[in-house]
Length: 203
Image 1 (cartoon, rainbow, N blue to C red):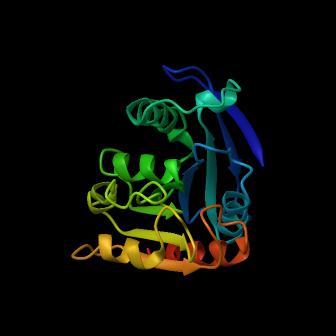
Image 2: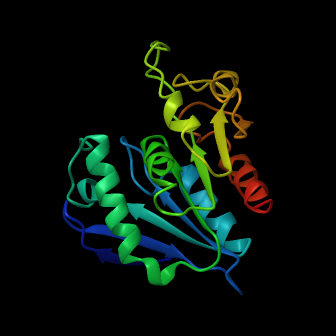
């Protein structure tokens, strides 16, 4: 996996690229969560399986993480940096563009997919609500996605279990794939990757 720094209005971001072994079937761009980076087990598993299945996978390390900060900026600032990164790596985009990420990164992908002309959104561990606060729902971000959407959700995720996410998507054509584990999706990364790649193959 190669890496390169790109400039954004919030400082430099870092993009890690996993190339497929042969022809590029499409490009998958993934962002990390607010509590970790691109080394999370689920992101690494999806990157490996995705590239093996023919996708060029770009893991985006947000500027706040590159700078060594512990607290992520507000959502509009995350979206601003993400958009700048996508513009900077447009030369790497081949085939259909799928945006995604885990947790906060999934939210960013949902909010920006339409403006970026994405062909789909892959949301890993979407934080539907803060733990114990179902009234603070972020369902509107999911329902606002106007392209094919899949949510890969841990069965015991305190930020929203698969059934809660399915209920939030009532009337929307998004799908939910339940996998073992909690919000970290670290219990069975292979299952996460398999669910993601299976969906990518249907686009």
